[in-house]
Amino acid sequence: MDKPALAVSVKKASLSEIVEASFERYEGTAQNDDVKVFFVCLKNCENSLFCCVCEQPAFVSCSECYAQDKIEQKVCSLCLNKINIEIERQEAKDCLEIQAVKMKLLSGKSYSEASAGITFRIPVPEVDRGREDVRSVLAVVMENTEEGFF
Image (cartoon, rainbow, N blue to C red; front, side, top):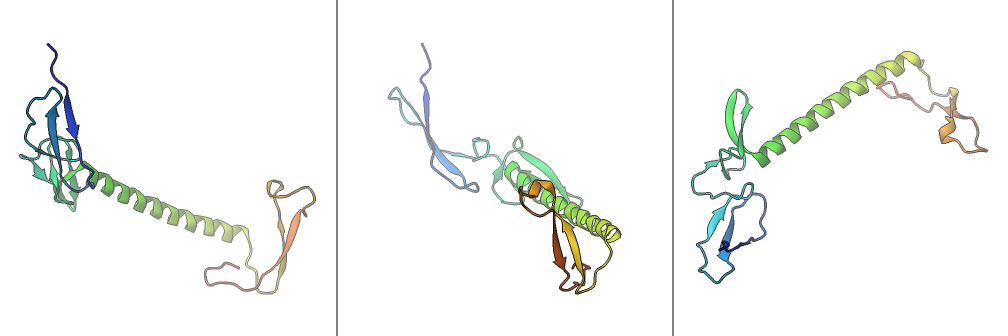
C-alpha cells in the first residue's frame, strides 16, 4: 500500500522570520502539530545555533564560519552572501579608482596642457559619424580645473 502524500501549507514571510508550516495528510488522517521551520533549509528550529549578524536560528549544516578581525563567527548562508557581496563591491570600487588614476596619468603624458582660450581639433571616429558628418570638431578651452581637466 502506498504511503499517503503530505501537503505543506506555507505562509508568505520575509527573509528574517520563522515560518510556521502545518503538515496535513490528504487521506483524512489527523493533522500534525504545527512545526516551526527555518526559512533557508526548512528544518525544525528547536535545536539550532543563532546567526551572529541577523540573530535568527541557523543550523550547523546551513551556516558557515566567517572570520572578521581574527574572530570566527557562525553566520547563516544569507548573511554570508550579503557580506560577500559587500566585500566584492568594495574591491570593485577600489579597482575602478586605481584604473581612473592610471587613465589620468596616461592621458596627462600623451596630451599637453591647454590654457584657456586655445582652439583645438577633436577627430570624430568613423563609428560615431554619419555619411555627411564632419571628420573633426573644433573646440575651445573655457577653463582648467584643479585636477588638470579642461
